[in-house]
Length: 194
Image 1 (cartoon, rainbow, N blue to C red):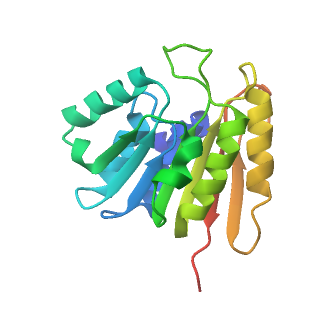
Image 2: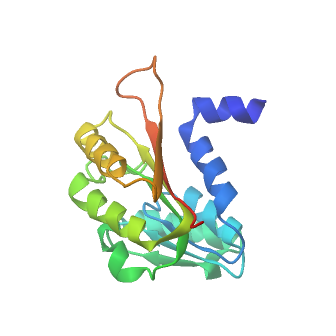
């Protein structure tokens, strides 16, 4: 019961739960926003020694922390760290990934002036959708409460809502009685072929 409550209070916990249901050992995944490396490590553990994760960040400090976290856990060989915007995902990652995670906004504890922006996030989402295998999942944690965040989140929501049925199922998890600035989760499942 505690896990279900935690998922409602923390949408990122729900994203992890959903990704855990689709990503299997040997699969490939992408952390579009490495940050402090928590999602990168999560994906690397699920992908296992036979799988691989690509992680992107524009900040050297973020990639250094992610690298240290992976090394401490013995997962560094499973991950390629890319010191560039997630907008370059389509140029760097080969098709055939099972999960892509985005955690938008800025690096916690970092420079708040350095943040994701819709001009880079939208092309990254389009690339991610093209890389996903049937049965693959794309998750996006959206943070509308910072400067430019609302515009980015609205653009993300519109792009994901435009993914066509029956090939995609898109959901949004947010608080109906919370602040309009509260973070929310969007997820898009590429429907498995029948």
